Image (cartoon, rainbow, N blue to C red; front, side, top):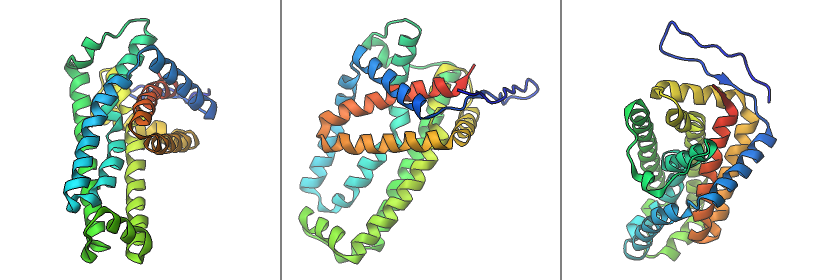
Length: 264
């Protein structure tokens, strides 16, 4: 891996971390390391506890509230936008293993204090804001396309989505907006949460460094983004058990992507 010139400005409060150039083989290696972390510390138990309540709520909405059906896909897709924040515990596990230390599950719920905790909290609020923007945009797009047509069941809703011009407009516009928000999240958070966990940096430094790293490695980031999306689609097809494996592996792998991209 080639490294760009390190430039740390001691005269101001914004350190410039060294950004390494990474390739596809580095992404693949990060995934392998993520799988090793997953096998060593089966974090799917935590993810199952997180996924099942969400799935139950969505199932109830699907069964008892036809008006909520249009938001099922945006909520599920939005979960991916919140992924970097949800994976903080997974980053902590990978970091401990990297240091040769154990990570007892009792530590999973201990608070992160000091600058690290404050930065992670601010970054988490940023993702919550993006998530809310996504839900609002999804609702507006729905109301502007097939909303006025109305439907009486989930089957009728799916028919409208896939067999009408309004439905295809909903699909195209909705996925375009979702893609743009996903790119924003990837660029600003690909390493911001791991960096904030690892070092005492502020949220602006974490986001700025993440964007520098993403723009310095566009091909690797496109590959990483494609792997995240395709893995989540595959995990969804395999139902909750699939997601309970895919999500923690991606979370652990994200830590190792950070370690490969940032030198300190």
